[in-house]
Image (cartoon, rainbow, N blue to C red; front, side):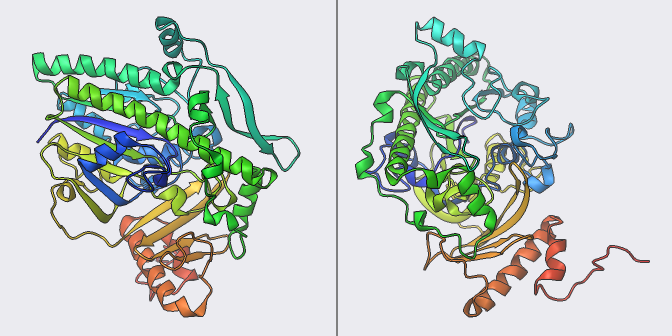
Length: 489
């Protein structure tokens, strides 16, 4: 089994902007397409939660968010923990004990008091949710290569409900591609790859090297050539832009206003989507540089490559931007590609999770994956086996800007979302793939709804996710086999 691993991760990446997952003529991603064509593409890969820090903590630990308890991005924290517990299991500690070189270039976003180095990763400490363009190592890189400093113009913003300028969504970057943060991260990764390759050749030291790009997270800040790469006139707006929010949790309408969607024109939306696609292509080109470096160093036969994202992005879908308290596939379905040397290319439709990459990493390293308690290795699927696999998956959400608990059950046809303080949601993804029509209250789906309620209730109880206590008294989940008061008197 190849021991080396290159782990590639993007942030807020829509799955339909990758050629092999969507329309290859709409967005040019030849390098990710080639990676998928030579490996295993997972078509039903989902994030455990569509928020950066808790999703990344689940990848590091193999724990669901409710279990590792790092539930919010610290910049918008609403009172949750800001770091993992000191004794929390991580795959990094296992790989370090096995003698791996560990490297991480890019977004960490995994806590406040401890950074990637505290978990054993080499690389500059790059804090925050977006490209830290004032970081000393980035500034040194610009100076090393005689490149101009960061500067933006032509900012794109809507108007916030209080009349102030809305959040920055996009802008033109007055730098060449070589000066972009994406090119910088790739160059630093290649430099570390050379060091790790030398260690492997002299001392047989394996490596785990991760590049976590901050993009294509908004704001989309790109050089003109990428900003204008795709013609807005050729962009089809998402069908869910017809969203009315009727029968939906009111928070979705509020979140649309927060992102000032209705204060911008359809032409603005088309341009934002076009710029987002340019961002995706920029990152794809950098991934191509990394794959070329693997080949040039003679590491192709000894290095597994994985690609995924922490969650998706709305880019106007459902009249929303960013991510937030709405469990649509736009932000919960993510890319999942695993390329292991010697394994045949294929496409799998099992329901898998970002969290499953943890056990996959451990198994590739020859480690026991059992401590990653909410993770299951993808390697049997990569090998073309057909093990028994769950027909659905659970996702969760705890808040961003404000507490907002949600749980989701997603199977091949239906999606159930429980919103304790608002309207629950049920979508028939076969008849309504854009999730525009909430059918939860419709009598003709009562049987489906009740079956999914019982299934979600059972899965939450099996996990130990105490959200199930709300469901015990509120929904037809069957007779209880415990005292809901949790007291024996």
